[in-house]
Image (tube, rainbow, N blue to C red):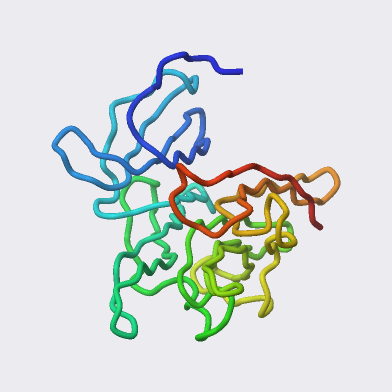
Length: 232
């Protein structure tokens, strides 16, 4: 249930982790001096938060922060903008990683963690929404949204890649691991976002995904709903 009727503070795309006895909430936004980027707030109870600290300036979306060790953090995020392709302006996004020893001061890695798919493939246009888990096999598993052509329209679907160091990823296959549903179904047009949790007791992955029956467009006019599934 909701514990607050009023919003806590401005922002979007929140991502929270527990570090020691404190909760850390990362989210894109604007700090007091007007600078945009990734903000960090700290709390002991999840309801009362510190003032925001700008920890990663610049454009950023879909943050995912993973603590690898007491002195090792990875920040996965999406970044992009308009680009000229074939004489027309199109939006292009890619996923990147930054590293830190304290989760506050970050060092960007310049190259995307995964290249876009080859022309004509399902994820040739953009990547976004990185979700990274380190599973019992010791490897880093990346799930990401990829966009490409589907029956003449742009559709987002979910792909999977793995890494030994959490910095350099390789695809596990050429097809999406979570595709849209049959045409005409509630999830038959495009996926919108998703999240994944590992459940240790039965070694299963639980995932929730938002989808729409039509192609991606003005989200205020789309009929977006949430589905659920599991995987081993």
